Amino acid sequence: MAPWVRIDGDELRVEDARIIWSPAVCASADGIAFWLRASGTRSVMHLAGWAPGNAATDLDGTEVRIENPGPDAGVDGRFLTSARVRFGRVTSERAVVSIDGEVEALEADDESRTSFSADLICSVAPVAERDHCIGCGGPLDRFAETRDQFVAAFRISQRILPVLCPPCTGSVERPCFCPTCGAAFTDDAVSTHGEEGRTGYSARCPQGHLFSGALPG
Ligand SMILES: [Zn+2]
Ligand SMILES: [Zn+2]
Image (cartoon, rainbow, N blue to C red):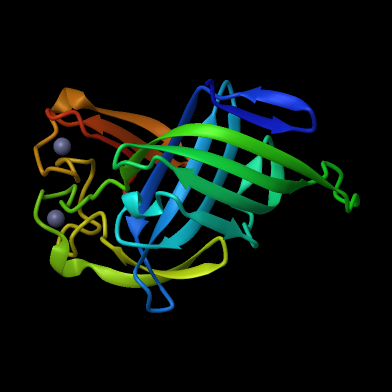
């Protein structure tokens, strides 16, 4: 079975679908926040949600209702207004996901809704842990903070690590160490690109982890 997203009688081609997840406490219940993205020649669908559990495999056989998807969810360029996400055959690497939902009309003053449905086979992976300072390679654990954020109207607490340790903040010119494993980047492994008016960097470490982004500050 090929994965698909159907909206307004159109079937959109999906070439890649993935779920990344992260442990997240919501109203003092242990759970996981998940972000689902399906793409083809363009972005086809993205949404986020929260479910009780400790790992992605706890999603197996569950149904998650998303009543307030927020601006971070859409299908084919339209805002999503509600969705029902059913997870089946979930392993730590793969999940079969069926979704029914509604999206807003294309015109802003049109109150009508269009339904959509999707059947996807998603790769599953935890959000990459980045626990090394990209300036000195040192551990960042003791600088972790817990912050609240909203994921589809679920208020979740997440553990956030800085990109740079406090001694490195403001004094680093370019990424020097892989944030995932702490290995040093060789000079020719780092390239630059524009990123929202700032200098962005892409760097691949000897183990193949990719860093892409601007330096904070
Ligand atoms: Zn540092
Ligand atoms: Zn690495």
